[in-house]
Length: 583
Figure 1: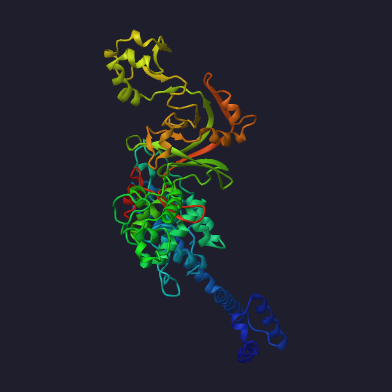
Figure 2 (figure 1 turned 30 degrees about the vertical axis):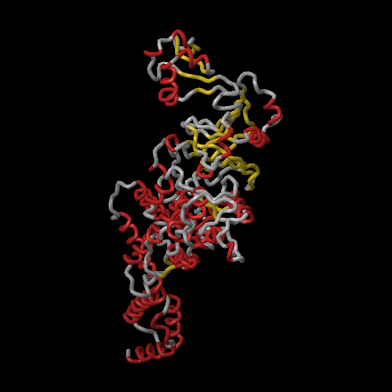
């Protein structure tokens, strides 16, 4: 027995790895014992077999120990994520519920594996996104709205699985909120009356956004791509960041109000006016305060650029535009509010579309990103605001009837009719319509006792003609507001700077030029053919291809040549958005 043990010890010394031998190695060991000439007892062989099994277990544990620990740690994080999501408090807020549902679905799809940690450490994408969210103000958003976790959270620094789980969820929530705000805006347009704004927010697919960013080669660019892609938004955002970078270095002194300046007048405000439109001070000190002819010509250029009547007279309207940029803080707040309203628009405005900007009293037709037609418009007065919405132009009506809206008929026309019905109908081209046996029929107004007629009992309609309120043509994009674009007999209003005089519809300065443009996509029709229909009965011309129409409200934007343009807040919508954003 002693010799046997001695042989065994010798064998183990000869093969030092045998303490962690595999089954194959055990067989080799037994064979070696035989070759040495020793035949161990059955008891010793049993001991060797038992030790072999133990060595095999120890060997496997040694080989897989670290991997098993990592897997368990990752599973602990996944369990932490599942638990944290389950413990999120209930809420009645729609957006919070939406965000929570997106997080739950996102993590469930990945079996609650962390999205932003790899082996307990932040991924490179996560680090980039955390830095980008801290600079969300570049996009006119508030970084404080996107709370991000600490970059020091990691397994190496001793963070628990629960800490890592919470950090992962926090970053996912920040990304979800950013992409939603960048895409749809922070202000729900439905805070406005339905008579003023009928735009429903369109939110992005938050689950898809998270999934996309976790594997993106450029996660920051992809996250910021949820901001509007429109040329107008991008240009305004660039200018916003440019002005922010300048800070208070370009403070401007407001130009005081006073008498309207005309050629030949002298006024202490002249040097400020020269500075505001980018001119050097007058070299002749004696004429420093002279409002000269050459200065008036430069003022005309400024007025034309800013949508004013280019008469060279510096009145209140011109001074208002010149002073809009003097308050740096207010200007930045205005720009943020305007960027917010860009987020309300459809991502796809259309290959060819019509855009009416209410504060500028202007209409643009854009085709493939280029403005191909511009004209002046008259919009609704403050008491009858032109609403904000998007729809599609479907047809034109030549020689249109004007079906008088109930509010106008009741509040404006009915009192006049009751004063002298015979005179009213003798001197106007209105018809009276009423429902007779379930059918709408024209009624002889002289047969009615107008003292007993109440609002809603009859309808009024104006027949086609030169005095018709809609003029010779209207452009229809059927909507709940019964608002459309149309001609007008009141042509003189287009010569004014301020053009908010309608009951909500949009009056177009050169309607047949607009008709030529919108009919360019309809076979066999143009403005000349439409004009041949004038003076006859009402005719409808249907468009072969519907054209998107967007009624928008921008008080701050960039011109085609890169100038920042400003307008007055006609309806107060911009101020309402600023208040909602706490600006």
